[in-house]
Length: 253
Image 1: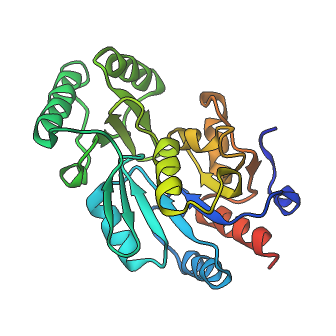
Image 2: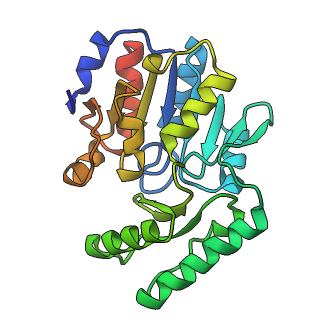
């Protein structure tokens, strides 16, 4: 079952013991954090439900987020890196030679620019370890489909969000990263006790059956015909207000 009203979440079993959420378009409003977000995160912390960020943003940016926000940890680069609450750091993707890996990613981006000269490297790309990003703005769905096929031909996986396109190692995605983090850092919590939240195609691995309790904030509906996996529930509100709606239903407030 997919896209049930969020009010059905109160009937969900088993008990939710951890929330894993996307950031951009899910915890933001017009690309910014809000007071209502901080209030919702603090409420979760007070009742003992850990919050783990799972984002496509770079390791550098996410290191700052996990430091300043009251979260249990953060997964960066769509499953590539984990940064724990206490400062722990783990590369989740198997990369033997970081320098050579970055050069291969740069070469791939250069080759893509030969066909799509309008591609713009993302501002946070210099803070990345495992993937390479460029801005999604200005690209059509037809462009994105061609780019995805070309990346696959060259031995990479590809995804995109509301802000960025990602060239990344095969098998690297949010769900794979989250599974590793749960196994190593939250072994007492089972996947069915995790609530995953997102808003775009690069979150769809979090909507897979392996995480049976998943929510899309309302703006995910814009992508419903472009995604193989849809969330189990959908909120009535978009972006961070949708996240706050989830927290409200979950905590009965």
